[in-house]
Image (cartoon, rainbow, N blue to C red):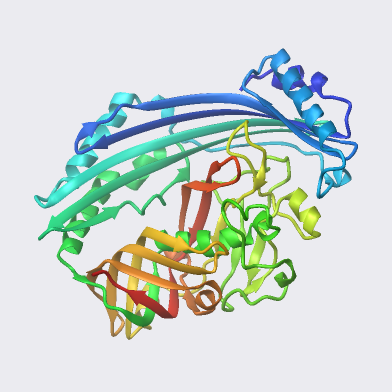
Length: 477
């Protein structure tokens, strides 16, 4: 980040109703070792500026990767021209007087900085993880990788806001496949779920080497396991599958731009209507879902969104009742609804749109042991491996890597090729018990796509294990 950015740019702010300038600097480093061979290391760096102008009933953007004074002036002029062009053509005019001034910062805590560990040490570590993955003769494919991203932003505007944030996140990945009689089964390290805001210290804490051995054993056992039977049954869903369920059937349908129809052509709309907020029974009484940017180390934790809105925890669903959408300041004004700080952009060349941040299912008071003990006949589902959901985020079908049968209150044998399906409303109303804090895990995904042009962004999900009744479970061939 250029330390003199504010001093250079503030005098350039134009005399308009409102203007914001957001500087973004991104760094990415990806290291993979597949089948005990280190792949070419990927390093990418990018920086640029996005200018937003509201003026006399018009709205315009200008963006540039030329961060010199002349480059920024050119982006300002472009934004001004688009604001002039759009006068009288907008479906909604933002209420500029409701934009607040904020000065602050946020920085990810990196106990051990990524840059302090040599590339050789990281590669050697991944090779050791590969050895642990290839611990059984029937292992047919294996690999491990680490992705590190750092995104630094500086936001200033014409009402004297000045916000600086730096978010760094790390995504460790492992995959191992085992073959038995032409049957291949795969286990991963939570799919893509184990991503956190952290430094290299996160790798030290999770013990990939030891976890790799467990994944290999599970892959071998699954390759020899029976297929899951088709039946309506009780299920306990593990956190690394729950995050996909939350993401697809709560997160996306509550995004306000979808509800208003903005995403209909590309990513679909939502079964949720504006009149449903405050009264719609989205799930059972034990369903409590929050937009929470305050959870330490979660992927989308921050103090402000990319429109400069102060971020704080809010309930989206409370005691099963739908409370508010995932809508930023401007889209919430348009819908005359309460907002959350969810205006997010993937880079300097994209405008902020309504995006999930940290969308969390609050823990309940039931231990995992008691949850299992309450089930006569059911199944425990772990780790997503496939998903399908309709354009309105209503009917869905999800597959899992691993199923464990529950008989008479005990976890018993493994089953493979397990999937389940449902309809959002009935599914969440079948939520019976919610796991306590001992089952609660901070997870997330780094590849949520949305918007035209597309924006791929990281999203946090924290959740306990959950027990659902009367779920349609089915197996493979």
